[in-house]
Length: 181
View 1 (cartoon, rainbow, N blue to C red):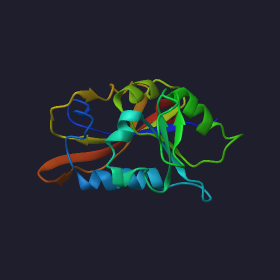
View 2 (view 1 turned 120 degrees about the vertical axis):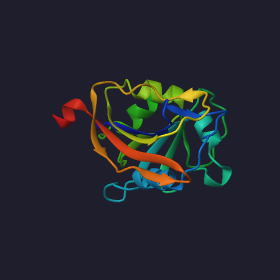
View 3 (view 1 turned 60 degrees about the vertical axis):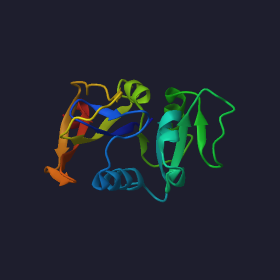
View 4 (view 1 turned 135 degrees about the horizontal axis):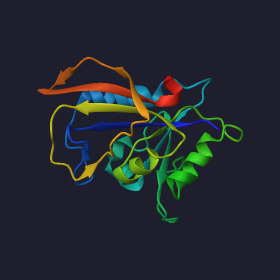
């Protein structure tokens, strides 16, 4: 069984959003997100983005579904209306089982993209092997947060400090400790 990654942007206090919106707009981060979640797939297999219902609803209508990726939305509401081609799962565990079972399916990389509740569950899952984080060196008024990154993840790559609209940020990657060792 293969694993999955998490991709997230956080402020100084691990804030990720307010009122179901991202409180910043950093074009370089959006490009980074798209490059990571659409790139790197093998032999024509699309990558997968798994998100909670609120994250799905927070995406601009003209950006849903996220192009070039298989979109999976988590909601226990079996009647929740999604566009053709967008997959619905009751819970994160069910979606991870489906997409990470390489014997049954042929998918590219699998990414959990939010929100807070989904991240909190995903980061504890033993199949989570990588975290892509955009760290923004500013505090925003957030009401949803990313969990503390456990010690069993270690920093494996870090960009130089970048700046856009007077906001400094950098990209950092964490790998599960036993993968690096």
